[in-house]
Length: 150
Image (cartoon, rainbow, N blue to C red; front, top):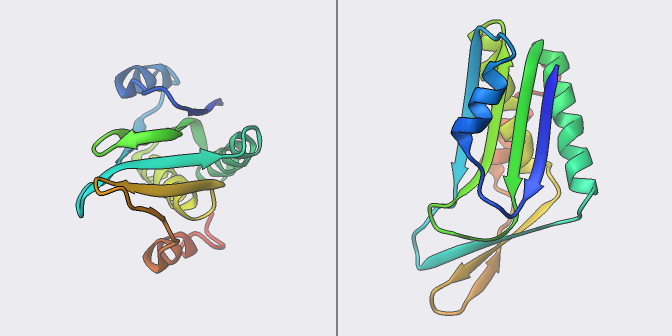
């Protein structure tokens, strides 16, 4: 099973990552690319993490996704640092023999990243204000659907 996890400041090349995972012989490859949302004067999102701990936590959830959904491979790349509006922030890829497994695994991993990954997010506004991003109930509800699944 191919497994790639990275936490990095640098942008990622989604096309290259998809091509690398497609070499697994999969029948289906699902992807999710998250972007920094704008609006309300937001200029950027600052992401902080604990090096080492964050990568290990993401690797554990990717391995769990591979087990639950019988994946041939998966890739999770999450960016850190100051990311401007519309910047790519996260890439989740899952490769499997059948599309449903790849789609479900991608949903499982992104729901976990939104609710369980050890990142701290701070919004940076054009007028100089900052605000820490709080957990949202809708994200918790989405992640709860995976409890006991698989």
